Image (cartoon, rainbow, N blue to C red):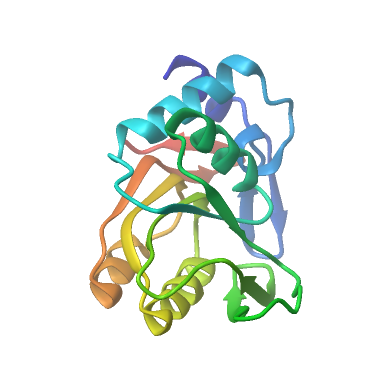
Length: 184
């Protein structure tokens, strides 16, 4: 976990209004994603689950590379919750509201009875995950696992309780005085 820890400690931070945001290769695509950092990240995610699922579900945009790496390692196909509609049959819309952004997102190729493992980069306000879990529940899709690379908020337990799920994280972090602090 050496590369991940080093990259977190060196991550630049910015403010969007009152929201403190850290910029990291695995959650923002900048600075550079190196082969070593990418492999270490995928290996850490693989340690968190047996991936007993039909599909790996990631979110646009920064979940896409995580889905690709996990698909290559597990052989399980991945599908992306997208930020724009495609108008495909059975497309499902859900609402995403983060600490600094609000929009609709869209699910395709997820069907009733599917077992999915959700993988995402950051859990902060929980707005994206709550919208996604609500849509999956309505679709009668089983969530096998939820794995989040960086837990930045205080909403994890609330979401777990509300939806009856367990959220597994690689790191819990906070931004303080312009620096990323690793809590665990």
